[in-house]
Amino acid sequence: QVRLVESGGGLVQAGGSLTLSCTASGTIFSFNNMGWYRQAPGKQLELVATITGGGTTNYADSVKGRFTISWDNDENTLYVQMNSLKPEDTAVYYCNADRVLSSSFYRDLWGRGTQVTVSS
Image 1 (tube, helix red, strand yellow):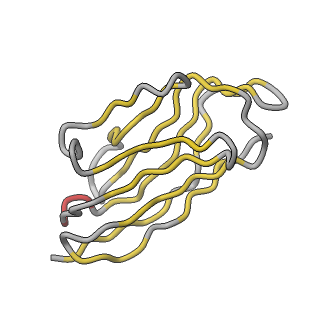
Image 2 (image 1 turned 90 degrees about the vertical axis):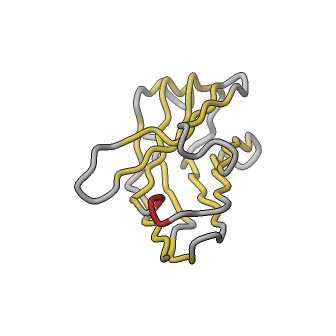
């Protein structure tokens, strides 16, 4: 079973930066989509950014120009570089991987999340 483990969350002041990592426990040979989602207290889960196996990226309007998603094939790790953070970016951030080919084929994998808190 491939597991996704997020790290890199924490407390940061508004205007600061954080980089979140999501490392897969097994070797990923290919995937359809990987992405970052977030859930703020009392709000629904929302898409932050996604990347396809071909490298095409997509961002929520609220993070465009501030966040950058990337996939390191050698490290089996998904990243999101978050700059110019705002208090409204405060949320638990989750990693997702869809249609992953590893030792087996997996659909819709989720990590357990990492907390990001941005103080004003």
